[in-house]
Length: 157
Image (cartoon, rainbow, N blue to C red; front, side, top):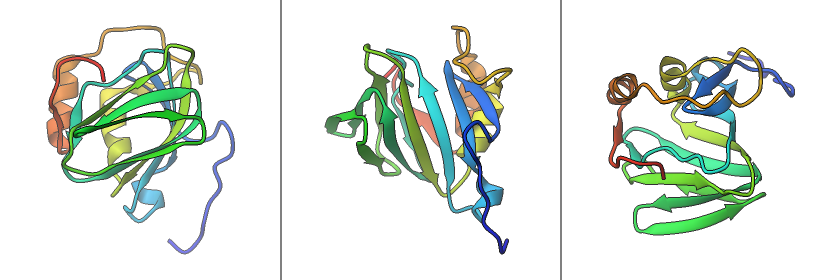
């Protein structure tokens, strides 16, 4: 790789992932494995179960809305324009505020999150939030183990 690239608004592979819309802006092949960058839109009240990334750092830059984040013993409310860093090996979760959807940039380093997302999610047929559905828990747990994630709690963040 010796050239940069541009992904404009609406560009990048889009997935419906656990009730969110995830658009991949940069993946492993784009960054020499350095990081994954995803634009995420999540509905009010959405939150993944508490989990641990054993092999990668994770960070969020909130573009719109608000999220409540827990990371180990710490908790924060993140508003539009805020940034939160979640180190590998520390249990964490988040929950989108009830006032409306959240739009954020998710960075994971090194890259691999896009592979997990593609395995658990499905290609988005349009760039909108997916219809509500129940996650395929066995599929989620199998992919989590494969990509070195551990689900450490039963409910949303």
